[in-house]
Length: 513
Image 1: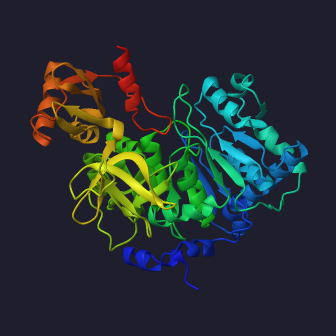
Image 2: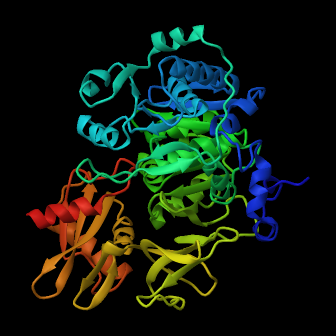
Image 3: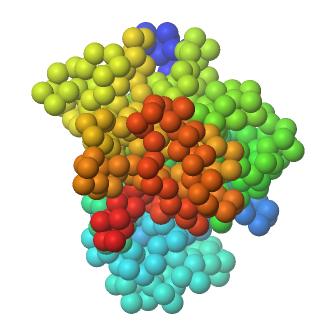
């Protein structure tokens, strides 16, 4: 019987895909299913590594499916001994490691709900999240434990001694969960002052995830897959960890402070063939100047989180010999637009978000809810449950049906009647060779309503001549009116924990000043 993983072309994706066929990739069914079993236990006999932890300090860690299966089973038994019941929440605030995977998958084996938390959160950020989900336990490292002692739940230090103590428990645990039982609470990357609501995923979410895995990151058996995004966030957890493991594919992850050359070296050392990263990661690789020092086995590349600037996209294709493919979606609605990495019959258009996933319906609509003609900017919407759902992003389509991002709805800048995209302005600014990062927002102006203000990160001194170079560049690349009338040179840009530039913070700072 042919499985969806047997087909690689765009034409086959459109002809062969059906939602029911996703279930053929799993042992479980619509009644009973468990993420830990599907990702780990059923692959315990595989010789290929389950996880390769690329560490910032160079001490990489290779974990087998059997290691994680046994450690997570022991952890599930330990949870039972500690009185943790199915449905209880277990917070996990650890870098990728055996302890992290033992806790993540062990909680789900037990029927508890795993709650991954970003390791760089301070006490306030953790306190707000644990107050929302009320976990029975919070697992972290020895360094973080004293800072988190007062946030609410019992804090457990998941160090080598803790893992050693689990050895007294049985290395086998038979999970028994309903497919619709809660498995993971995923918090989006908001600030500590504005807590996003937890997105609550069930065990059957692993099945619907396969649409993004097959067509967004192009995962197929035999890949060696690397995703440097933190598994505390949707991209790093779902697309970077759970999706490859569910297909029995080696998942490469990154632990510690990100270093672009360290990642490039790992691509060579571990011969990764497929990589999905944030646009920021690719930009940092380009700026490192180290890409030419290594050899690569890459066959498929994808990115998500925010648009990738054209200079970085060109660098990626020159470096790896493959175009980088967009994967667009949100934590709440999932992936809806993809560029089908690995499909030789799909032309990747520079700057585009790709086309809808197989069987998906996506439109660019005007304010009246009518489809916009090609070239006209409107709001991106997806058809779900017999209605159109707004993504809160703007976009346009071209004559060939490709979608293009035009920024968040609140990132549009209207100056003297002209509508401008912060994304396009930033892309033009980043073409300047001396600029590492850039962000653009609209600020109030008594004459024009708004004018563009750019925030620029550069190693070069920010003076009047540099400011004029930026303005001339944008006017030449875009139009005579579409340029930053104000330019601020800053040491760094505010970012969400997921690595995206946080224009909302910039707007708030401007308003306050």
